[in-house]
Length: 275
Image (cartoon, rainbow, N blue to C red; front, side, top):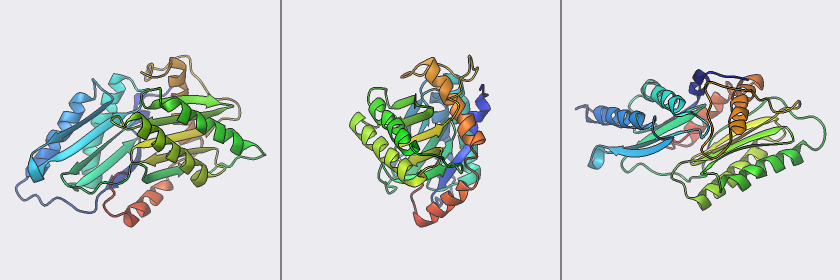
């Protein structure tokens, strides 16, 4: 199924720190704007960038990452949507993370408390349950392919196994060993948190994985104006990824109710803006 680039800019979740930055002089507001402008300017040339704006206690560090199968133009379109959304959804909080379908951005002030790279930030488990025996084993093998494939694919992997589409990605500056460990944690979470759901998405601080089962086979399309070859995959893998965006998020009914889960998680995890 062909999808437009606008599908990549759909909000998945927001994470806003509880504390706002005291900013009577407007320094923080300007620094945050400078950070956003810098990240947006880099998004047409790279799919990951991390930078710092400001100095000393007023410094703000931020990054963006696009999915590995997005074209450069779609990456920029996706990233460019986030600053306005961040200000609207989180205001001038000292840290925030905005996750869209095709990219995310996060920032934090100097000295902000760090969380583990394998911290669970957000999950989406499809409401449709698998029927019949053997699905658990099939899913286990399919998710295992992410772990095996992620190490040699620059931190981004897509694939299929017996009609199960899988995708995994690590944050751009995560080392190979840490990336594999993170994905393993995400895979374990997918199996324990989503059980026999035929689709799921697990977002950890430094990586995420998703899967979807298609009984009639993973859909493909002959072309898509919004997809291009992944740096670490093939055109076919890219088209399968496009299919999961529509099939997983819309066709399998993921998402809306899970925003309540996110809201609850942030109340429980004070200061952990990452998801």
